[in-house]
Length: 289
Image 1 (spheres, one colour):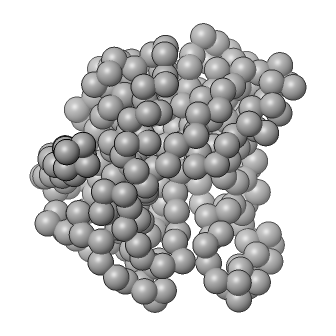
Image 2 (spheres, helix red, strand yellow):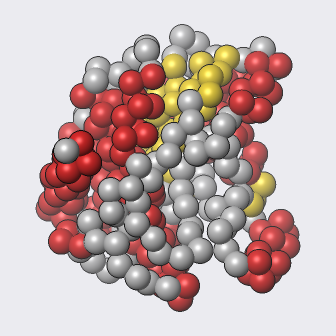
């Protein structure tokens, strides 16, 4: 499904979270090459990436954000002056241990799911995302989740190293279910698509212990897709004019297929969506007091 030369983003402001990560950087670069002005957002400064994009004739700005703190997301939203036409939610974390975010969420749930939901809500409430597309970078590991614990959304429990990958898959199931519901609620104004780019040679395991890094590094280099290649279907969902009348697409790499039955369950997704924003409102209110 190659992009045509006419699949461009001229005049579009695009926000990419996780922009300094292994996958986020080539996504930002490719979007800029198609005419977008890219807001590169990550926990660390994206100044080097911005300089690289500008050296190639593109347009980009650096907007750091800590997705483990809702107040930092508020500051990011407030810094965006022009309405966005595209948001790519690429940030993700596989922590070396469980820990709470600034508002007391489990860091994996907080960064991989709640931060994206909060960011989109704040952008829309502030009139900064009224039309366009959202591309959600998820994972096929979402299929490992057997249920969604609505009551446990705000709980920062201890799961240990042995439970890290199970929690990661669960966080991606939450994200996929939210995206399915958002695609229904935003229909007619903002399209929402989700993609699993497959195993990517990225920095997502940077918090793993040194002994694990020694094993994972060579494995990722040998068997995982280079980030530049894995970014291509993400950019397709962001740019393709052939998708203008569609929303709610789920891609595994380049293959379109349904996500898991759990996240497709409209009743489950609706309850999750409503409970998510009730929880976020409560915790953000507590932080402001």
